[in-house]
Image 1 (cartoon, helix red, strand yellow):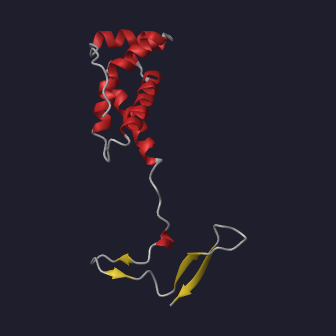
Image 2 (spheres, rainbow, N blue to C red; image 1 turned 45 degrees about the horizontal axis):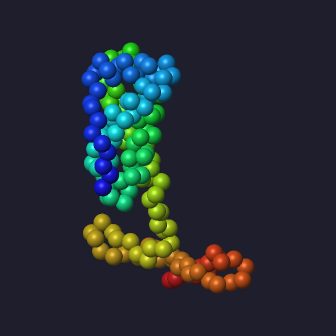
Image 3 (tube, one colour; image 1 turned 90 degrees about the vertical axis):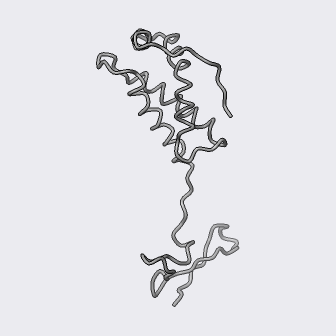
Length: 148
């Protein structure tokens, strides 16, 4: 489990000052904003759908990148708190991080489907079944034959 040292939560006024400095290009102010909001990123990572400890570090990393993007995109003249906008970017980057890991199941690997009643049903009257072959041409070639 990822632990981070306790940091002081910024007040609205301090947050605004650091955001103005970060918009002007001050890296120290930007780092202060990032470090002050790490506990929020950890909270978002732990409440993320499909969260487990194996991907916790990746979610926190993606959330940190989202927070950096939020600092770049934030418009302090709007009068909203930073994390109102930041949460969108944090969750967006976490979603992209997890979404790129999902495996897609090829349709031909399924032997049967289920109809709306929950009963097993065949695909169609004429369907194909593919199997891998070990030919010298390519190690990824397949043989497909029609099944009636």
